[in-house]
Amino acid sequence: MAIVRPFRALRPVPQRAPDVAAVPYDVVTTEEARALAAAKPWSFLHVSRAEIDLPDGTDPYSPAVYRKAAENFEGLLRGCPLIREAEPRLYLYRLRMSGHEQTGVAGAFSIDEYDTDRIRKHERTRRDKEDDRTRHIVAVRAQTGPVFLTYRDRAEIDELVGEAAAQEPLYDFTAPDGVSHTVWRLGGETTDRLATEFERVPLLYIADGHHRAASASRAREEFRERSDRPGGYCEYDFFLGVTFPAGQVRILPYNRIVKDLGGRSPEEFLLALKGRLPGAIEASPTPVRRGELSMYLGGRWHGLRLSSGEPSSGALDVTLLQENVLEPLLGIKDVRTDKRIDFVGGIRGTAELEKAVDEGRAAVAFSMYPVDVADLIRIADGNEVMPPKSTWFEPKLRDGLLIHEI
Image: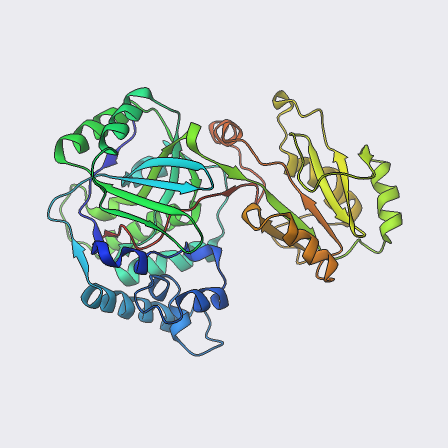
């Protein structure tokens, strides 16, 4: 069963929602966050990336940053203001972008289920990133950005969501990036019916937000050590999330750029590639099917065939790229630590890959075909992990709209 628990959300008043809503903390650099929050005193980036309000060069993991986050959070609570719901509720959260639409159920999800793998993962987490968000949760005593989850579609849940989405929303606005965000607060009866339906869902899957979930689990241990409660559940036994039916989830490619060709000229690199992979001289910047990729080198796009493209082959394209090109030809053994490789989310488009190579910031770029959500579920069910930076989920949920206090 999947536990989806209603909670008393802390949230901005409706007229302030567009001002508060912020991109996820981990998709922007400090400089980008500072620019996005400039002249926007209610932007949640002042809480999620509080180093933007400290002197340039401040270590984003220094104690001062977490103190500033707590201070800014308190200021937002009083000044924006934020309001606290009188009763625990579930919510709907709809995202719209470029003709794509997905609607998920927002609530509190069980850390026990996360710890026992009833909420399944497909990605390894990094300890330093866990440390950061754990300290942030403890500092502000809240989970301020939702984990993005998915589940196998269920018609009964779709029906309840459709009925609830016909009502007047709590928030409905379009962010500067063109993504529309609509949130409904559900009535008590609908909340209860949805929670009951999710009890029939055998498993949930983390799509995006592995570090948020892992940090919530670690923060719970710290809160438990401080607590004198005799038993029973507390709010810190749950984490904030939004879960979407798998059939609505959209995954974009996570592309790669490499700074050099391992000592080869472009002509030598192409020759070495031909010995390992069949390819075409000219190709589209975007591969059209699984098992293919497009490579930008020397001012032109080249098509490469990685595999037959049949789903039964199992291996992801990012894995085949690693095995056939990155390690044997470019000497990149661990993409987590090698500074010669970088990653570009699919939302930035292939023009960003061309720009990186044409400006000399990279020697070669690889445009990938996106992973399918069925692959994510298959890998998670097999207790396996995807290679780093395999998936880019878009559109993304916003921080600060629904806050789970601990």
